[in-house]
Structure formats: structure tokens, C-alpha cells
Amino acid sequence: MAEKYNYTEEELIKMYIDFSKKVGAGETGASSKVLKAKAKEFGIPSYKYFMNFFKGMTDLKQKSGYFFNDPLIIERTNTDEGLKQAIEKFYRRNDRYPNRLEFQYKNELLPIDRVIDKYGNTNNMYEKIGIDIKEARKISSQKDMTLKYKEIFERPIDEEDIKIKNKVEKFYNKYNRYPTSSDCFDVRFIRYSTIQEKYVNLENMYKKLGFKYYNERYAEFRKSDELILEDLANIIRANNLKSWNQFFILNTYPPASAYKSRLKMQGFDIFNKALNIKKNKVSTKEDIIERFESIREKEGKKRITRADLKKHRMSLDLFRNSWGSYSNFIKEYDNIDIISPNSNYSTEFLIESYIKLSNILGKKYGAT
Image 1 (spheres, rainbow, N blue to C red):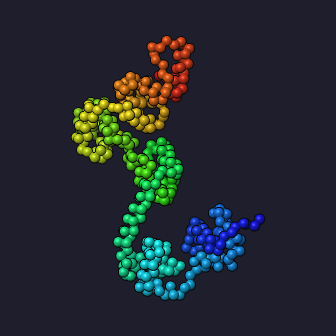
Image 2: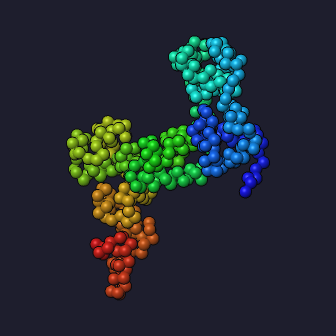
Image 3: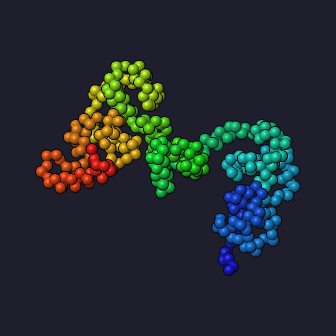
């Protein structure tokens, strides 16, 4: 069945150049074998269709700029002054200087192998022909980064951002840490080329998507300074510590040195500030819920028991002061109907409710 396209020769040349770059043949042009095998995969017309417009692959490649035989450009770029003028022309056309791969006759530039033979490297070449490339690259880089930074943070969150944010959260729930660049190269997360194209780097991605504590090594530190100090105060109270030195030799996790790095304070000041917060602070419901959700995230389960709270040094008094009891908190938080021990219910109803509660809490052999 004949292909029904209506492309001009110019459009076909552009398709062929883009296709060649995608299949890794951007310098030489894709071969007829590759064009025949992969044209359909990349959504371009077939080899046969191309040949209706061109006399053969040589004709296609020559018109696409892959064969070069202009003796004037070859002669001009072999001189220092001619090469300088060619590079400055490239800069005016592209608003940047050429990279190594762009040093080709088809770009009206001396090929990179000839540059190396003649000058040793591109830095020597720029110095010899009188172009201050270091300053130019610095200005260009700053300009590019400023424009890219504005583009990243001024545009609204889109559907792809949301998908990536969901992948970050899924990764965190699985590994209890945020993805690093090595995870992108191992493809456990997202390819780094995707991150670079959309955000430039991981730091920008995390900032754009609202992950405040992404660069914290310890999961216990992925929250506000105040909550970290509260946790520390609970450790101090539980172990009856009297000084920072006692805490230092306690061999906690995270270690004492990590608290100093995270809070950017001296040990003595951290110890005293933690005690003062515990002494003067009245936790709001929002504070308590944030700590509770942090424990759920660490434990990786929906139902948090009193034992879990004790393990993470979260006092039941916090719930009693704000909700009357931990059961009342759970009832409000998850809308679970917890039965009051003073209610006048039948034995059958209580058994049925007990089984229901055990199932909700995931207790195969019954809730304790």
C-alpha cells in the first residue's frame, strides 16, 4: 500500500537530520540500512518514500549537509583570522560558541581533528586566534542558568511534575530516603537526562516539587528544627541525661555529631534549647499530627500502636491533653468508631466490634 504523505524536500531533509541524531549518527547521517529498519519506529516516511525525492543516499546526505566540498570555506578556516571570523559568525547565529562536535566544515568551521592537530586543544585555539572564551562561557552560562531558573520556578506545576512527585514519594516509601543522582543512572528512579531537561538538576526538582528536607541523610531529620529538638528532649528525659557529653556517649542514631551539623549549633546550646522547648512548649494539635504522621512514614504502616509511639519516644500525654485519650485521637483522625468501655453493649456486639477493630489494626490473632 502506497504511503500517503505530502512532504516537501526541505521537510524530508529536516526529518532525516533529526532521525540521524536520534539513532546516534548525527555526524555522518543515518545509513540506508538504519533508515529502512527504523523509519517506522521513529514515525518518519520509509526509505522508499525518501528515494522518490532523492537520487540515492549520497544525494540525500549531500543535501542534508553531511558531505562537504566547498574549497573556499576549507581554505578560509585554515587561517587564524578566517577561523576567528567563522567562530564569531557561529556565535552571532546561535548566541553561543560551538562545542567540540560542532567543529565541522558543514558549520563553516575547521573540523575538530584539524583543530587538535593545529592547536593541541580548543582552549589553545581560542587563545591563539584572540577570543576570550573563558569569560564568554562564564557570561553565557550565567545567562542560560538565569533564564532556565526563571523558566523552572515561574511556570505552574504541570501533569508531568505531579507524576514525578508521586515517583519521589513512592521511592521514599520503598527505600526510606530520597533519590540521588546515582539512582537516576541505575534507573531505579528517573533517567538523569529527563531531570536535566526539565529541572537542570535534582536540587531544582526537589525545590520545585516542594520537598523541603530532601537532602537530609537521616530520616529523623526530615522535619522542622523545633520537632527535632522535641525528639531530642524526649531522649534526654527517657535516659535522665544531665549534659551534652552524656548524650554524646549515649551512641544514639542519628549520632550526636549529626545533630550539630543539622541544627548548626554547638552541643551545649542544643542540649539547653531542647530542655527549654520541652519545658515551655505547649504542642498544638497540628504539631502532634505532624509527629504522628512522621512515625507512620517511618514505620510504613497505616495503624500506629502505643508501642510504636513509645518506640519513637512520643508521649501519650500529648494525645490526652488535646483529645482526652489516644483512642479519641484515632477516632477523630481516621473516623474509626472506638467503643467506650463504659457503654452498655451486648457481649455479641462487643465481640463483633473487637474482631472488626483487630482487622482494622491488622492483628491476625486479635488486638492486644
